[in-house]
Image (cartoon, rainbow, N blue to C red; front, side, top):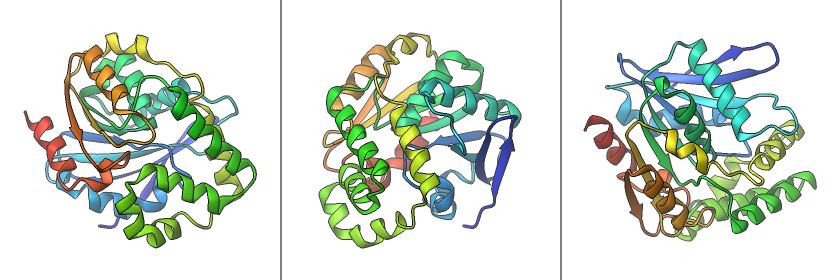
Length: 263
């Protein structure tokens, strides 16, 4: 599936996105932190989520292209809200994962008119000590311009050992050719999560929510997802053996979400 990259231009930032599918219902995908922009993989993402194309117009948003230093999750949420407003998106079904799910928590809490149903995948409402150490290490490697070590650590933490061993060459190849500007952007986005705690936002989320996690997540312990679901009084489904990127590895992940959206 081939898609075109579009851009929303603002006074100080621009946000890239792509869309596919065609229906009156709107689905927005807010991806997690990555070294390379999700726009580099637009065709692959559209293919992976084609199950939604018949029932939704699907939008996939990137972070702003040139974030300022001290850029925060709240800033990311504000910029995502501006993108929604610019495209006149309301009552959207949202799939969010990892850092993207942190953005979605703020968005859903502060602009309930934008969200009809919400999926929070492989995420948390705060940054526990173990997660902070991982992000700090990635930031250190990015600052040293050690791209090979950064990409290897990133992939090893994101994917299950079996998946990474099987697709190691392809995964690392897709993450190669990282530019200095991409590394600087990654450093800012990774640092944005330092000390973050969104727990107070959860009580303001009123839309139906489904939390999805994996018991082998190396980034966010599954207990963080359980705590979110408890505070949101919402459904939770826990996979076993896939890791943080369960959204890429579990064969029924998208179908499970589609069932939730149809209910």
